[in-house]
Length: 495
Image 1 (cartoon, rainbow, N blue to C red):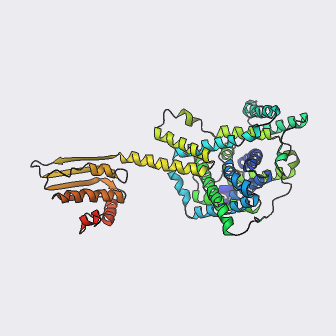
Image 2: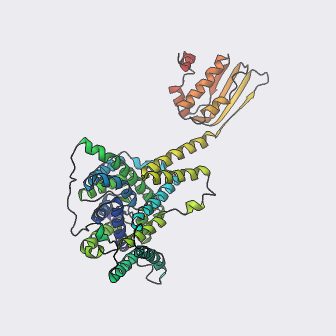
Image 3: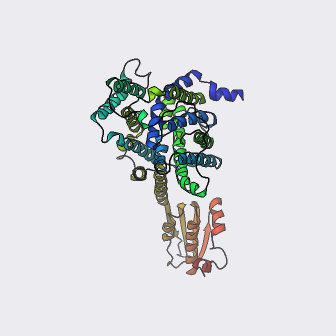
């Protein structure tokens, strides 16, 4: 027990504490901005970020990964909040947590291996585009001061890191917010601020059961959103966990992470927060700042709440233009620019999967739909590609009475027609030998193709011998095949 505590909490105290402080400072503008995207008060996102970060530090499966309120989840909530209000969002958050815990116990975290790299790239690119699009309302029908402040904010964000000595020590988004807030207050600019978006928290969060009727009608309203939130949250969390695994050269328990995300979201919903998940950008910041253990996430969440509660008067003065600049930076940093450069060199199928994921996601504003389409397309392209890895040749003996067919490759629904077409059913032969020692039969479509070939040959009066089936193929052929059973022809023809 003590050794486990040391290995996950106390092995990197200095690095984790400092990284947690940096992440906490960077979380404030993002939590507020994501709340605004979802259409709720800033306190909802801030409470969620605090609660999820603290809980996931204890129950998550990937030390060093940061979870909080995210743009991907906020985008799914927009319609629910607009049509039904905050209380239904809190109820959906609780249901999201339950669905994610169920996914963890069903070990669905392991399904991430079926999500190809092109789908992940499309997911990330679509997220970046949607985050940028969510900033457009703050940049339309506004005074020139807003555009000037946004441009200046972006300048600070991208140029401050080049300042000697302090440029790398202080997060440039934080400098942007502090500088733009000081300018707006000093000049008395009449522009929108965080305080105009809603009330900030001035107390610690309290237990809050959603005030919604416990009826099937309520369930019908929240379930589609909860399911989408659960899928999007787990997808982004699993992808982030994979990225952190690569950065730290360590493994993680994906199924425990699923359950941990669920527990954290339930806690968030009960404390008045929105659903969240792992954050790709903040997790990378944490790791690059020296965070490796669970302590970094705990420090980030705790410091975030303390700063917001005790400095709320200052936070409310932050101009929205500064947050827009931060979110544009997040959008630019999230987008995979390499994917554009690789369009010429990558296979067409890979590019189509990525672009389809982006297009569906941006059109539907639902990351889950985009990933589903991407996974289906990737599976179809893969099946088509593997279907071409089938080769059938044959040789006839000297007297022309025996022909031997040799099958090499994978026989399944995509290659079954090619397998059948390789046989000549009109050739007058006494015997045909089908050598399957280098072939594999995967499904009932492949078995039906073998039945069709054998029975057609027998119908022409040819003796057929099938040999060389490996154990797995023989099992499925014995179970579903009919060519070696009585009345096989009648069964195949449906009589």
